[in-house]
Amino acid sequence: MNQERSFGQTAEFRTVLRYAAYPALLFTVPACAVATLHQHWDIGRVLAAFQAGTIGYLWALERLIPYRRDWHPGGRELRCYAVYFVLTMVGGALGQLLVAALVARLAPPHPTLPLRVEIPLALLTGSLAKYLFHRWSHHQPWLWRLHGVHHALDKVNVTNNGVNHLLDVLLGQALVQLALAWLGFSRESVFCTSLFVVAQGYFVHANIDVRIGRLNHVFGSPEQHRLHHSTVLAESGHFGADLAIWDHLFGSFTWRPGRRPVAVGLHDPASFPPTTSVLASLLHPWRPAPDATTGPSN
Image (cartoon, rainbow, N blue to C red):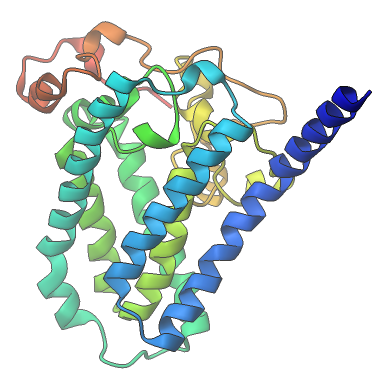
C-alpha cells in the first residue's frame, strides 16, 4: 500500500512539473532582470551565471521528466559536446566583438524610450533577425553546410544545444547584434532580452516532457523544436526558437497537439560527418559539396 501511494505521489509530482516547469523558468527572466538593473550588478557576469543556472535547471528536469531516456548523453558524447560548447561560446563572443564598436556608437547613452517599451521592441527585432537568418541557413547551400552540423545530431537534449559550427554562431550573433545596434536599443534593453533568449534557447532544446498548451502559438517549445529537427521535411519548420509568431506569420508553423517526430537528425545522414568528428565538422563547409547537402525545403 505504501509503495502504491509513493508511486502515485511521484506520478502526480511529475504531472505538476510538466506544466509548472516552463512558467517557473519564465519567472526567473524578469526577476533576474529587475534585480540586476536595480542592484547595478555586472551584466556580463549575470548572463554567465544565468546561463549556467538555466542549463543546470533543465539538466535536472531531463532526469525528472525526460521526453526520451535514450536521449540522455553518454560520457563520450558529453566530452564531445563540451568541445562544441566552447566553440559556440567563442563564436558568440566574436560575433559580438565584431559589432561592439558599432553598438557603442549607435546605442544612445540614455534610453530614448521607456525601458518597458524598449524591451518588447528589442525582443521582436532580435527574434525576427534570428528567425530570418536561421531560415536562410536552411535554404542557402553554403550556410546549410555550416548549420547542418547542428542537425547531424540524432538526439536532442540540453547538453548538445551547443553543438554548432563556430562560423554559424558567429554570423548569426553578429546579425542579431547589428539589427539591435542599428535601431539604437539601449544596453539595458538588450540585456533583458538576452536573458529571455538564453532561457528559451536551452529550453526548446531540452529533452523534457513538458506541456505549454496554447502558449505554443506564442513561444518556442521543446515540442516544436523536436519537429524542427525531424527527418521528415514536411514537418520540420519552426525556425523561431524564442517566439513562435514568426513561424505563424511566414508559414513555417507545423506543430499541433500530440504531433511528434518519428526520428530526429538529417534526412541524408551521409551528407555530414558524425557529430563526434569535431574537426571534420569544422572543415566540412570547405569540402566539395554534393547536391544532397542543400538544406530542407521548408
